[in-house]
Length: 369
Image 1 (cartoon, rainbow, N blue to C red):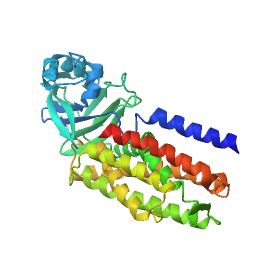
Image 2: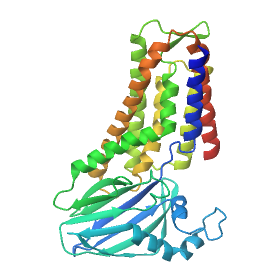
Image 3: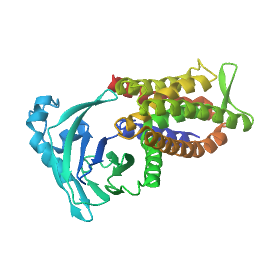
């Protein structure tokens, strides 16, 4: 028994060590484009200072602390970078891009550097956009892009693998936007290791029951399936609520404290597996799910679309999150059903896995404070 157990926990610890720096944080930018009556366009590109500092020599004194004076001093370099990594065209004819002075935007409590721009374009109904910034520094970087024409907004995600998109004011590309955000929802939860570890911490004890102050395997499968459905449903409903209301701008929580709260939720859930204080996890899962939904919603904070489009975007992203979450559950649950009657699972494997998750979560909480 020792070899399988040893290998399993070595893998858990290696994964935690490799991914703990990533946790929920992703590299994202926000691009808004508006078509003018004369066929020209205007818009803004917002990026995180951390990302910008790695592709443009903004931190002139190299002290690791970016000041607004340094940003303004480097505004010409920032403008040059934008014009060399962002381009527009109509009917294969390039638009002439002009950038403005950077400004500071505050989105969900996070400071972003925003560069306004305008472009002179030939007449036409379509607009092709190509963005290739930040990808060399961070291949996971993505830009949430909103194009508005004739009072209709279309949102898509530009990534390293899909850095270009053709908007058509006669055809808003509704399904392209839906599929794009479903895909991003799937990827977002798969790269969001804090959400994955929260799910794993919840699932580690669905195959167990408390008897005489000890964990033992459940004798039948039906209660395991019911418990899993209750927990996953509570988490899904909760994060869907806060994802929607935060994305719509009805609440604006500080992203820093949301991220701290998410880390603490993972920590407490893992610790509760070892020293169970709460044995009925449905309501506590719902409460923690509200926090995780705010974390998901930070992705949408700067989408400049109308409320109907925002609802479709949020719904599409949330469907993707649920698909990604379901894949994780379907992958883990059969294994948990198999190992529930193995003596070493409640005695060693579950406590050690929970301890590894707790250590990683504690590290996140300290880093995010």
